[in-house]
Length: 520
Image 1 (cartoon, rainbow, N blue to C red):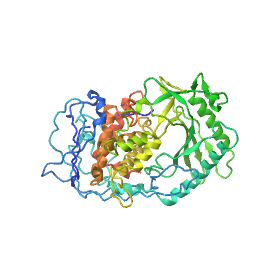
Image 2 (cartoon, rainbow, N blue to C red):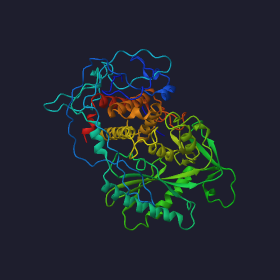
Image 3 (cartoon, rainbow, N blue to C red):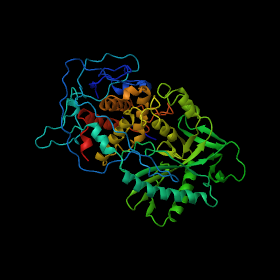
Image 4 (cartoon, rainbow, N blue to C red):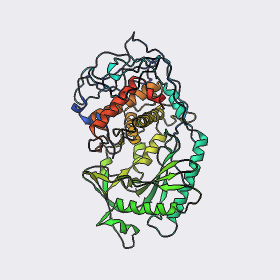
């Protein structure tokens, strides 16, 4: 389970978009997030209005230097039997305009019914920043608190987003070294599970995750690997109208079914099956002689078996068991994946013909978990969407026109990662993860479907993504992209205080042009 929680600035690009931006209603500043209808989340494709003539240009400022660090990676997960060391290179992003006008425009009109607030500028004059603000550097003006900004004036610590993306590019040598180690370990585990008699003899590798999606933004020290197992002729029973969690039963369960030992009554227990899977992984790890590996302690509610490879350098590998279901997608997904205007109805139909997966992540039940439940997973579909993300089929191909979609997702993930690093001693950001960012990003793509809307100005595209994410935090509503009734930001998943904390920190970074990008 995942979850989370401004007053508007009105940025405008120096170069107008090639297509008419999508209009959306805007809420006046007086409307508070909890007074809005959360169902408006899906209708939030938002573009900024152009600044009126004569707006004061934001002066160019020099970015504050950052401490040298390893360039984070943006690649795929692991392919046990293919060459994972195949490094991808993200396309070079065009340089953003040297002077982007971000001036304040006229007061927005009140919107009818379910409006989309324009997030991320000044807060009320009486609101105080948390005491964790950066201190003033000698000889420089202090960073501007969000509450004092009428517009996003330039301040020390400015980072050009193109320079940040350059820092995030994958290094081929690092990828090859890490991939070789992980390939060897994963290949050994697959061979061990397939040999002899085992309930998991039929497992295969399912290549998913940020490494395969080419959007990984940290060093090559974390990988996600899914081991899929076919389970034909099962029946799903939805848990508590959640849309995402299900009980699994066999339609016909002949004697000799190796999974019978994991039944509790008629239900296939996720916790019992994961426990046995974990035991087999631990057993196989002992047979790997040339690599120092340990299995980390089980985390409550986590569907993964986490390995820590200690040599030649530390690499964390999450191995997730996934049940492959080759049947129609559950009814709760019927109105999900709204890509008709973006990728087309034919693409959506073909994607829905693919199997879906169930992972042993239990549903939360009070202060505990319902251990027999499984959660839907569409990570393989997410990978396909990111790989073929353009309305034009040649978007970002070698001979095609480049867009900023993946660049924006990388920057959003990197911002959340840096905020979690900065506040690692606080609990407010612990429940937020990159999946929240990716879900919001998919919604923005669906609401801004034309490739031309993602080409002209990196800063504007990134700001549009942040604005939507801030809206989701404030309205406490982030719909699962595939399961509309599953709210990733509901209060039973992430408390209101945590969402408010993340909102203020993102607004601060946004108003001061991301000084955090130079802090580490």
